Image (cartoon, rainbow, N blue to C red; front, side, top):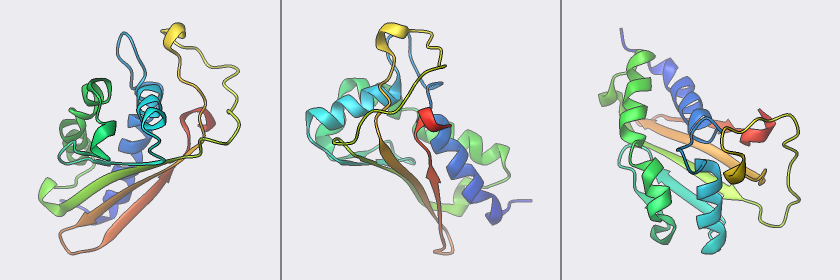
Length: 149
């Protein structure tokens, strides 16, 4: 049976995984790719539509960012199914990432990177996953920086 109470868990788990160092390709880590695009265009706040892969501001949707975001709808739907939430129960879902470009870097001591030459920097950001269900109820979850996990 589908459960609305699981939506918060779904959005938190999806966002935590999406921003983690486990989300990488052979040549890059998503958290670093997103930061580089944000920094390049001085975009302190980035919003990713989880259901459509759209990114705002548009200029941040570089080919490297797109390489990762294009799978958002698929990975989100897979997680919904695993936690007994029907896709029709979700009207909208987004991930908001706000960077603090002026903050000192965090500490990555003790982390192992499969591709150390492209290891992500420990940038400070605030991440919030937000979903609106088909009843109009908002579900939100804050996600810690990958290096604070």
